[in-house]
Each structure stands twice: as structure tokens, then as C-alpha cells.
Image (cartoon, rainbow, N blue to C red):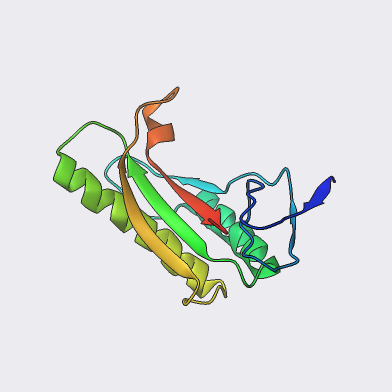
Length: 132
């Protein structure tokens, strides 16, 4: 696995380093993503596995913040979509905290609607951003 040393405010796809830190972060680490069924904010078995793996990753970088951003598909009422996106993000954030990630590090928010990618399911997601 290729690794590189992060310098002041450099982004590697996983972590952000503040001035003076000496954190090593994998350059090719994928962004953990949890997908949801329509109009639902409940983690399924696959989502729970993604969160457990993301929690392990977050524990490897204990000084890095964990930002959880929820999205919905563009169908529906915008206000309801924002609330659903936030509920999804909260569910993932709560699961991360239950898996041992310090609540001081975890922040969640609604990213609102996301345009369809290949399928509507890809828009109904929560991204777990470690270090950004």
C-alpha cells in the first residue's frame, strides 16, 4: 500500500492534517458510504457493516474529526428531503458513537438532495468523511 506524509492542510482522500502534525494516512482509502431505502433512515445489515468498518478506520486516526453527511434523491418535497437526509446522517453518527468513536469527534449534517447517479439508490446515501 502506498503511503504519503501529509503536510499542512494536505488532503489525501481520507484525512486532513493540521500544521505540525505527523499523521500518515493511506492515499487510496475509499470514502465509506452507507446506502438507504427510499423514505427510510434505518441502517440495514450492510449499512451496519460499513459503519463498523468506518469506526475501525476512525479509531486508527483518533485526532481526526468525523463528518457524517446525509443525502436524499431529488424526488419529493425539499424540506422533507432535508429532514430525511439529516435523520440518515444522525443514524450513522449514532452507530459510529455506539461502535466506540468519541462523540466529540462526530458531527452530522444534511447534504440535502443529490442528483441521480446510475440509480436513485446511489443518491440515498450517507458519506462518512474522516478528517474533512
